[in-house]
Amino acid sequence: MNFDLPDDLVALRDSVRKFAAERIRPFARDWDRDQWIPDSTVRELGEMGLLGLTTPVEFGGSGLGYLANSVVMEEVARQCGATALMLAAHNGLCISHILTSNASDAIKKKYLPKLASGEWIGSWGLTEPGCGSDAAALQTRAEKSGDGWRISGHKQFITNGQRAQVYIITARTDPAKGAKGITAFVVERGAKGFEVGHKEDKMGMRGSDTVTLNLENVYVGPEQICGQFNMGYIDALKVLERGRVGIGALSVGLARGALEESIAYAKQREAFGKPIADLQAIQFMLADMATEIDAARLLVREAASSLDRGESEKIKACVAKLFASEIATKACLNAIQIHGGYGYTKDIPVERYMRDAKLCEIGEGSSQIQRIIIARELLAKVGG
Image 1 (spheres, helix red, strand yellow):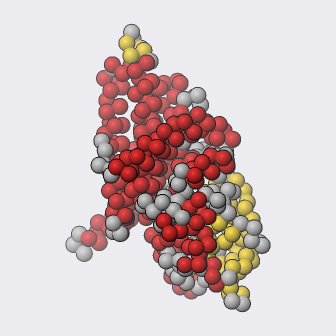
Image 2 (cartoon, rainbow, N blue to C red; image 1 turned 180 degrees about the vertical axis):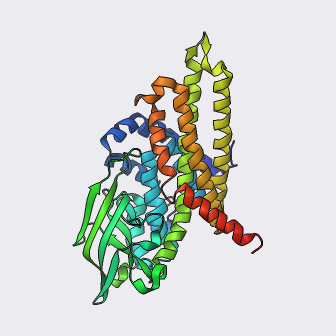
Image 3 (cartoon, helix red, strand yellow; image 1 turned 90 degrees about the horizontal axis):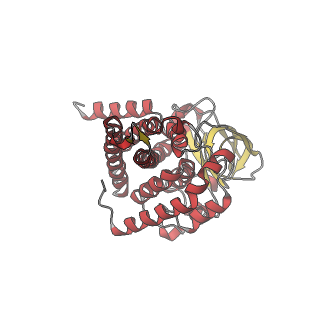
């Protein structure tokens, strides 16, 4: 089932689909094993304009928006979830924060062209060892120092942290104000006191690097404030709304990959003298997968289209992300079941898809957090 994409996005989808099949799929297993996506592949993504999809044209991007981003995310994730996650952190978190926070023109002119071209890769530092779902509990501090600030603290589970050249770091600038006393800063790699720390050895999304970041008296000037002072947490919530749509699209891609691999296998694998695709038990699993994937895609693309229209309905992003991530895990588990013993080996992509899919139920707000937000929004609208 399609979402009536305009012609330009159909062309984009087809070109990315071809690229992913030829330049990502053959190597995805190696990247998973090596825990790294080659720099050459990242450069190719930049040359295709995929690292600046949501960046305005005046800053060197494509300016295509969130629906275009969701289309690209699905096609890339169909072949490699880790590559899609790298794009999600770059476009959906780092660049998104610069754009949604009303960052200064100086920051936009300095960083967006390099990020959009792929010359630099971006990262986003919100999560800490002691705060994940409760992001407002972050402990990283930024203390006044002359005209600028000195940042000290630790960030954890930071995607693109090893690869990035520029980071958006949230820190407390007014502890007495709680969530309303948090500011976002732009920090460049190589800043004195800034260290890329431990790299996580993850279950899935292994090609995408995830690290800790350590900051000890890292000096930033006033021009490095990203957005308004003490509005960093509020802006982060807006960023997460957009990021959830991207993770929803990534989930759809993984689920679609699981379905397509399962259909191909079921047609050629025989049991009891006929292809297992003829067995009703297998047919029902495939039918459920296809139905749920179509529903998830529609939810994701409607949420993305809402963002492109300038509408901020966070319930749409939460619903799309929740449903898509959970059906992705289900689809991947069913795919392994359909493949039988082969599905439990690393020779078959569905094993990797399953490991990758589980992260989608955790990152950008867990399924439990999505349900809390959805319920609060519903209760506030009905009878409020």
